[in-house]
Structure formats: structure tokens, C-alpha cells
Amino acid sequence: MLSFLFFIIAALGEISGSYAFWAWLRLGRSVFWIIPGLISLSIFASLLTRVDTSNAGRAYAAYGGVYILSSLVWLWLAEGVKPNRWDMLGVTICLLGTLVILFGSHGSAR
Image (cartoon, rainbow, N blue to C red):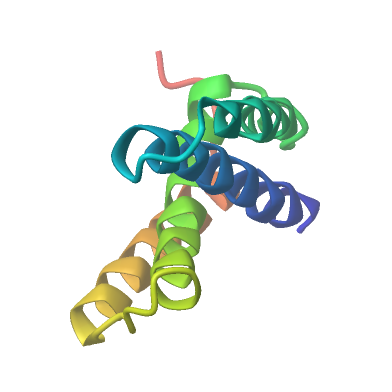
């Protein structure tokens, strides 16, 4: 379950870091927005290395579902757009995939 905590904090780092670049390039904010953006993206990248899995690709794949959920929370809280039922269905499917990837059997498939 510690992996989910790392995923959630990593998602916050990735979304806030990416948003800093969005604010600079799309919203006309100061170029200095990229400084906290780069720090946030560094936090994101370092936290994914803490996930308990032997393969980076598996950690990234499992993280995807949590990222999607976090993006919808950002959509709602930061942008004021409430996710609809299709958003919720999609994120539920993705989170089920996250669980399968993290907790499924990963024996040698060669």
C-alpha cells in the first residue's frame, strides 16, 4: 500500500510541474514558473523509483491509473470542472488495471 502513497504524491508532483509549464506557455505567466515546475517534476520522477516493483515499466504502467484519477481531481478542484460519469467509469477501469499490474503474478514469462 506504500506504493499507492508514492503514486499519489508523484502524481501531485507531475501534475503541478506540468501545470507550471502550461501556465508559462499557454497562460502567459512568467518564465520563472518553470523553476517550481522543474522541482515538482524531479519529485515525481524520484518517487516512482520508490515503488515496490522490480521493473521500471511496470511501475510506470501501474502509476498511469493513479495519474488519471489525480488529473480528474485536478480538473475538478483547480479548474472548476466536475468530472462526469464517463470520466468516473474510465478512471475506475484504469484503477482496476493498476491493481492487476501491481498485484498480479509476475513470474518469468519468457
